Image (tube, rainbow, N blue to C red):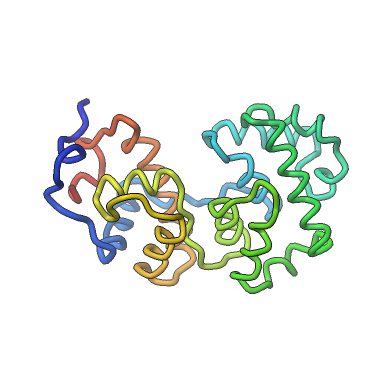
Length: 227
């Protein structure tokens, strides 16, 4: 199916920040509640946040299952296992040597700062915890905010490539802007409800995977009404 011409020429409509809640409701009606983050423990969620960097979630699931089968999906196990063995287990997630190193740095951070006590970690002020997470090798804003939102249950809207692609095409923002500008827009436009922040990001991932691809499927997309 050909992409909509509205992506190549001036749009009939510019999406505004006040429309974002309506956009979420449209996606929720189309996809249903996404029930993210799919993890059994806070540490598994953090591992997934690193493994999902630059890869599809289906590949992360394979790596997670490898770790689980090897009894290596815990804070203590990641600290104990050799980096080489860890890389082999997470190979399906891609960039496995880099990600193994990042997981090791995450485990070292958790030990040094919190002695592996996740409850203590999540009690920390969100902004201060974010600052500390961003100092960990391999953790950028998207990964940090995923941990903060899905793990610590704090109000940080996660901005990923799908978010930028979808809402740039809908003219919510024109031109290139920093991660923080994007996040501030969503944080300010939406009611402070954790389930909303949580599920809206998951809905964005769903529409990005199924419709708003490099060659967009606009005619069948639930967001067509906003073009």
